[in-house]
Length: 461
View 1 (cartoon, rainbow, N blue to C red):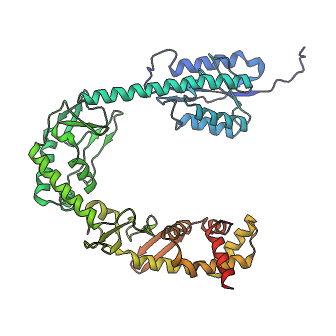
View 2 (view 1 turned 30 degrees about the vertical axis):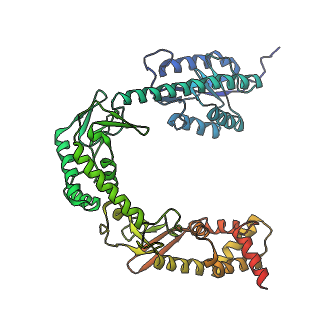
View 3 (view 1 turned 45 degrees about the horizontal axis):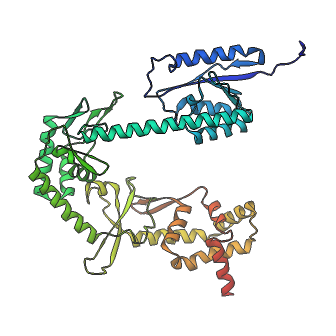
């Protein structure tokens, strides 16, 4: 029998409420307010057990239970990890999550920080083995319900598109959306027809893109279902290719590789569509024979290379048209990639020249006394059983065997050590990864490139 001197441990309780975007907010068992009231009453009824509410509850209106990226849920988990919440109270467990895997990860966090949770309408205590069993059973049904709902939505979407209905997404330039049907926007449609006819005249997406940017023609400006205005952007070559291959302009709807007759009117007639497709097919044939293949060596500086104006430089290349023709690799700016060569004044840079400059600086840095000391300090901290002479030998050997490494291995080491290569008018600036030397120290462990470099030294002695 308890005495009046028994001390009741306080348990700080946070009520978590969620309503899915597809659930009616006016239903009493789904409304945020009803969930919150039920949760607060649940806590109040257990006040004698030390349950007290925290000052701020966590509400996530309009979020799916299958989505863990919820603002209030992130805040709740942060409070648990900070030791500010002992018990999470929900109306039903599917308010917290409908995914068994996601919920299992949350329970691991609860256990790690000594927290638990309770459901108002379900007699579940996550602190007991029986409670965990019931949780798994109920969550399995919740996940099953979510998957079945997803299947129904996908089936409905497919059936609606088969009927020619527009089922969401960014409307194409030239159309507005009215009751799931595309309706021609005549001023935009006039622009679309002009773009298609001009492409047939120019036979070049690069030249057409430049003209459109110069004339201020942009992609679709529209307002989404949340009332947010999405302004148009300059039309790139990729935008043109996507539009030219979109059957919506001849009155059709594409879904999962199938083409259905749409409920909307076409903007482009069939002869103009066929003429554009013929030009695209010819361009594709030329690109296939002239550009590099997926089996070409990886570009050493894909990712960290930047032009003087801050644009990222991207690899591209050509091949001589003769059988087994030689491949030539270059780097061009992202704007050149989008709008055609010459958009950025830097132009194209031969890959071999700039990669050689970077590798020269990289190998010099690797063999400098300061770098060797930094790597040795990190190796000693990691305590992987390698002595200082072995570290010195391995790093010096990188320069000896660099050209013998596979291109993929060279690229991996560059990404490990280099964060950014900035092209300047008077040369290059290399920014090293803050953790690069620590990563290189790990490379000296057994079964790594560093171990092979150590073996190389033994063979040459």
